[in-house]
Image 1 (cartoon, helix red, strand yellow):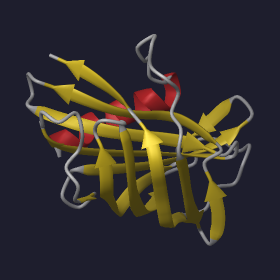
Image 2 (cartoon, rainbow, N blue to C red):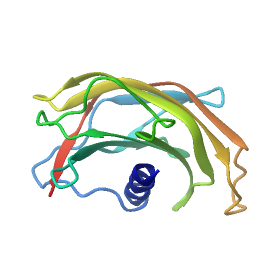
Image 3 (cartoon, rainbow, N blue to C red):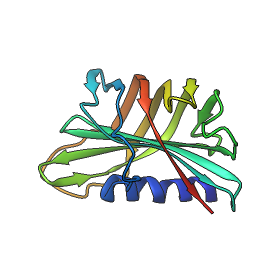
Length: 176
C-alpha cells in the first residue's frame, strides 16, 4: 500500500505540475488511444512519458500522461531497478500494488479528479532502450469518490478499455 500511495502522489504531482526534463531531451512522440465508457478517446497531447530510476530505493517507476482536451489519463507502473534504462516487458496490475491509473476531467484551465481506481492492468509489450520507445496496452476501472465541483457532470463509474500506447518516446530520470 505504501508503494501505491507514493506512486499516487507522484502521478498527481505530474498531472498538476508537469515533469521537468533535461534541456536536450525531445518531446514525447508516439500514440495513445483507449475507449472510455464506450467512447473512443485519442491522446492528442502527450504530456509526459518518463522512467524514473532510484538507486537508493532500488526501484523504478514508469509514468505516462496524455490528454485530449476534455480528459487526461495518467498511468504509472513500478518495478525493481534495472540497469537497462527500461521497464521489464510484463503485466503490471493495480491489484498487485504495482500500477496506478488516474483519469482527470479538464474544463478550460481547471482539472477535476473525482475517481479512484478499483482495478486495472498495464502490459508492456515491447521496449527499445536504445531508441527509448515503449509500446503496450492498458485497461482500468475507477469509481467516483466524491463531487469536487459543479462545472461538469462526471459518471459514477469510468471504464477504460482497449487502451493502446505505441512507440511512445520516453525520458530517463535518475534519482539517488
